[in-house]
Each structure stands twice: as C-alpha cells, then as structure tokens.
Image 1 (spheres, helix red, strand yellow):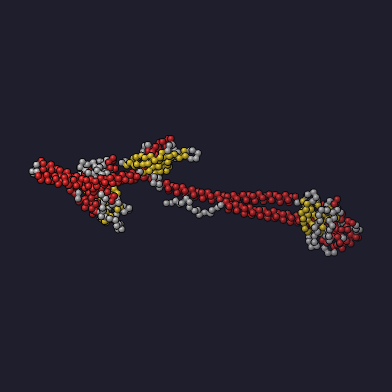
Image 2: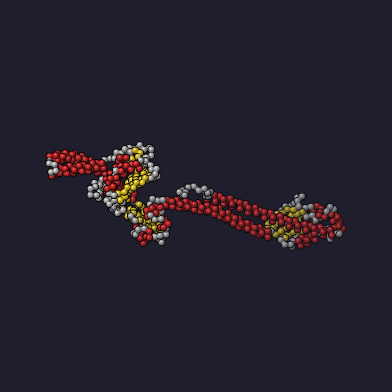
Length: 595
C-alpha cells in the first residue's frame, strides 16, 4: 500500500506561536537599536557640522580683525561692526565677544554690549589648550541655539611679535580708551568669541530623518513579522496539505478495499466512485462505470436508486436478489443514502452493496447440520426399533417360502416379502451410515491413481449408456491427505449421479488440479439434463431426490465425507446443459498427524 499513517510524524520544522513572538521581539529590539544608533549618528553629524561652521565664522572674524588692526589700525568699534555684519549671514543668530565674567564686550546686537550675556547661566570657559567647544542652549524665549565658543586672539594670530608691534602702532595713533581696553595682554587671553547658530533646519532634518527611520523600522518590523507569519502559515499550510493528502490517501485505500461494494454519485447522478468490491459484485469495470448513471448499469429498480435520486430517501439493509450477468444471481444487502453539506445542499448519493452469498451458504450449512443432527437421532431410533423385527420377518418369510411348492404363487409372495425386507434393511443401513460420525483413516494418497481406480469401477455402466469418460490431471499434483476408501465411495456416488443424469449418453469429465491454498480440486462434470435452479439448494438434504428409485442420501453422504476431510463441495448446474460438482480436499503437508 502506498499510504502513510494519517497520524504519523512530519519531518519538517515545527513552528509554534511562541517562536514567532520571540522572533518578532528580537527583530523589534534590533530595529530599535539601529534606529537609536542612526539618530545618534545624525546628531553627531549635526554637532560636527555646526561646530565646523561656527569655528569657520570665528576664524573669519579673527582674520578680518587681524587684517584691519595691522593695516587700518582697527579698534573695538570696527570689530563690533564686523560682528554685526557677520551675524547677518544665514542661520547665524548672533556673535559676541565676552570676558570671563560673562559681560559682552562686543555683540552683534549693540543693545547687549557691556551687559551680562545671560544672567541665568554661566558660560563654560575654555582651558588654555582648548581651541573651541559647543553647547546646545535654550534662550529665555525658548529658542534653541547651537553655540560655538572659542578664544578670541586676533593679535596672537599674526605670529610672534605681532602683539607688541600692534600696541606700538595703536599707541602711536592714539588708540586708547575703554573700547580698546579688552585688547590689553591681561584680558585678551581670557576673551571668548561666541557664535549662536540656528539649529531649526538641522533639527527639522533630524526629525525628518527620525520619522523616516521610524517608518523604515516599522516597515522592516512589519515585513519581518509578516515573513515569520508567512513562514508559519506556509508551514501550517504544507502540514495541513500533507495531512489532508495522507488522510485522503488513507481514506481512498480503506474505502477502495472495503469488503462491501461502494458506489458514489455526484449531484447530477453520475458515478464518481466505484470500488473493487463493487466491481466484483456487479462484474463491471470501474472505467466503464465512471461518469455513468446507476440506472444505466445496474438492474432496473435495484435498491431504490430511483427513489434516492428523486426523493432523496434513505434505505437501510434491504435484501434483494440481483442478476448482473446471465445465469448468475447474487443475494445482496443494499443501503443507500443522500449526501448533503452543512448548508443542506444535495451533493450526491452513496450506494452500499453487501454480498450475502457467503452468509446464505453458512446459513444453509447450519440448517443442514441441524437436519443431520435430527437425522442422527432418528436413525438411531429406527435402527434399534426396526432392524431386529426385520430380521425376524425375513426369517419367517424364508421359512414360509420353503413350505410352498416350487413356482407356486405363495412361494413367489414369500420371495417378494424377502426382497422388500432386504430393501428396507438397505435403506436403514444407508440411514445409519449417513447419520453416524465418519471415522476416517487419513493418509497421503496419490489422487490421480485413486481417480483412475474409481473410474474403472463404472466402466460397465458407462459402456451400456454410451458415455465417454475424459480424465485430466494436472502435472506435479500434490498428494491428498484423505481416507482412500471413504473418498472412493464419495467419487462413486458423484459418478453414479452423473451417469443417471445422461440417459441418452454424453461425456463424463474428471479434472484434477491444485492451487496455492494447498488444496486439491476435483471437478466431475457431465453433459446431462442438469438440475433446476430451485433444486440446487436442496440436493444435499436427506431423502431429497428427483429419481424414481433414488433414496436421496447419496449426495448427503458425499457432503458428510468431504466435510469430514475438512474440504468443501460446490455444485453448478445449467438445466439442459449439464452439471459440475467441484470437490476441494487438503494436500498432504508431511506434518499431518490427524486420523
């Protein structure tokens, strides 16, 4: 069989919802970490960019201040103007120079000169070896500003000796006073220049990047989750499909090999399923029955198929006699029902045919055994009550026959009495033989030799009736485990029945074969008048006979002998053509010790 057990294990990976949940959580953590790293990277790039921009602006201011001081002897007012002009650049909110106390010495907004830069915070001053630093601050108006701090040393940038030269030039030109006081050596080492840059465009860009990252993360998360779910669904689908295929194959094999015939039709009434048992019962090929209606193939009115198709009635265990082929009638038990789905829609019908031939045979055998048991009790009583008086009657009839003259009418009457007593005694003897248990002396026997000897015993009978004997034995036939004498008696009874059935001559054929079941099969067939169909089931009954001079015990004795040999007998007859009696007896296996 090609099926697999529907409950068998699958070799594929088994996924559970917990695995999918765990995988989704891991994927979510990975996506969050990547999003966090991407946001920090964007912030770092922003700070580096703004720091570089602020440092570049500060260097530009220092370079301008240094050039003006060396060439045009600038002072604080010119640097103030330079800060104001530089602060006009895009994204520059303010620029200022302040001392260590946080007072603005110069500011792009003149109103804030000589004022504390921000009373609510202290500016973190740079150490002596620091070039610049930055911080993200929030002003009093809640505006966020990116500040870049750097030492303001315009004089030192001119190189060694530049500051002394500048001071001499400034003194020679009368550049003294408060505005230039913050260029003095004790202050210029502590001055800071601050650039306030607008971070709004960068923050908007970061927010946009964060939104994009969030969207991509959600998409990745959904794709990953969808992938895991799809994998789970795909595995579940494959497992369900495999289970469905296994179940379907298992069901097909079970239904196909059911011992009952199963015929299923669709809603249009055409056959869609026809199993092996149905083929055997109906003697129809599945390919022929496919897509045909039951009415076109099965006997008319079988099992109420028309009722099923018309009224969708249910039939349970209806016993019918069906003739599917010529000279073969099969007793059936029929069940039929319609098929509907959950919505009540009609889908088709199912027809179940169960062959009752074996059941009928067993029932007949039980009935016959009951008759034999009753006959055994009757025979014992008859033998006891009748045989002794018969002996006395025969003795008296013999005595009276001797008392009368030879050839007289009285002597003839006495002779007839003796013959009738002997006939009655023979009938009682046959009855006893039929009723008593068969004591067998079983041994290994060459069947072909036994058949040849038994046929010689009827040579005279067949010669006078113009009957031809045909004897065929298969080569290498196995020896039979039988009682030769009792089985010879069985064969002679069958031969005599066949001879008596061929009053005008004919052919008597004896065929012997063996099969794989370790049984020898002997078929005795004739070309006589045959047995009517209504008599086939009665031929083994005691005292049933259609002959004028028959006792009706011959085939009954044959049946008992075959049964005692653990074999069986089958009779097939066609009226007007002949009868075939098949005898099955066991082969000798070499280990049989039964007697």
